[in-house]
Length: 545
Ligand SMILES: Cc1cc2nc3c(=O)[nH]c(=O)nc-3n(C[C@H](O)[C@H](O)[C@H](O)COP(=O)(O)OP(=O)(O)OC[C@H]3O[C@@H](n4cnc5c(N)ncnc54)[C@H](O)[C@@H]3O)c2cc1C
Image (cartoon, rainbow, N blue to C red; front, side):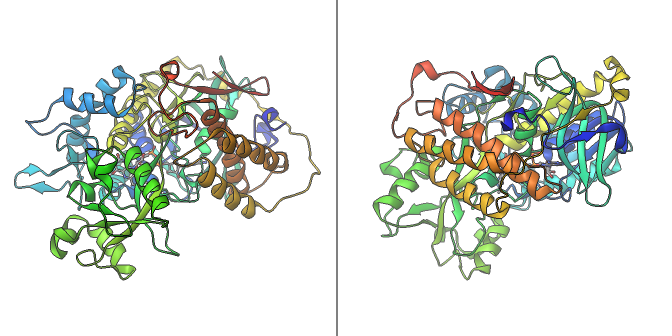
């Protein structure tokens, strides 16, 4: 029944305040801000942030950005590493595009005043799992995301055509016709601001850059804003969602009771940190010859298995070889976080375990960032461009967010002239049936859903558990997606239930193991499945292709 609900709310657009802009960018992370800076060369741009513009996955990134900058490295090597990590699903044209554009993006950021760590007169280049060369640029050690977000926000604020709307929650994409789907055009968004209430932002072009879905899992590195709003609103509008089963789990987050799951960057293993189990044994070489620097899916599963074998809730990272000064200089944020829990990385082992980290799937785009809807682009973690295939190479995502931010901003800007202003005048009315069914406690549902996703749709999956998960989600949906809420907490749970449905359905159908998707009941890759999986809403049904 919920699939009939094209919009979360009933509304009559003519009764709501309107704001008009040339380009609406939904999201103020790396992708959204880079897109806005580009689009502003062609017209007026509004960028929305769900809370503050500083709060995004971007701001938490630690490791850095991947780019070929060392004369000993080559584009071909970076391309080959990305293809190999993607386990047969990476799109080579997209990979070539991103890899070749990456050094230009870094140079541009330097011109915009972003600080990168240096080694003498050259950029300091780190190494992360799956990379065959040193090619990760970073800032203030492990504060790359913060420095990047600050640099892009500063540049956006200096750009005359850009306005940022804080605390502006985008509820749904508006389409003409209102039902959305193939052939429909995006004409803006229905939004909510705590002070101004519901508003319509009408745009000639829209760029969806609303980020990730990590908060769907109980254990996650993502901040709480990452509630899969982008995936859910795109799905309701009829956009095709690709590879939703592909959630990458990060092997090492700090495991201290009562603490949020702070990431311990892969770059720490790049600096020679070892993984030890509770008995003090180094175990990674038993799972992969690359040891601690094997791709993330392999390290996450190895830790999962080793925890089961040793009956423990975590393993340990050993960085004691680095010494106190070197560690705190290279990883000041991680060092401070450990010390805030009484751990001295130069003397103590750091307890870690895996957590949901990066959503590879998302709104399907072509190589120009276009989605199935006219005048709607997607970039960053909200999009699935095909760069990562079935597994993401470390530090390729910020690079992708910048490259596709630039591309979508330019494409949207250049196409402004083609869009007839008639869209702006059209009224949109939508009415959902009233439901008198029992109200469930939203906080309970949110927490239970996150636990369920962690237990049954985590690092190791199987058909029976996935089927049960679908049943449970479907039950909750009947009592949550039949209602209309008037605040972000309600819309977020509705989006989380919608995205969970898409993710679990995709995970159940992919009856093989590939990249980050591991099925213990189909534990090898199957050539029949060397293809993407697509989910869309059509005629009130969820279609998987
Ligand atoms: C802890 C951590 C460490 C990481 N380290 C690295 C790294 O070292 N290198 C790397 O390449 N990648 C890293 N990643 C991944 C990378 O940070 C993200 O993939 C990238 O930042 C995504 O950028 P984005 O612009 O697409 O989304 P985000 O940066 O998440 O921005 C999303 C934006 O959308 C807004 N938004 C969301 N929903 C709505 C809504 N309903 N209405 C209005 N606005 C909305 C949010 O407010 C936010 O502004 C890391 C991620 C995490 C969590």
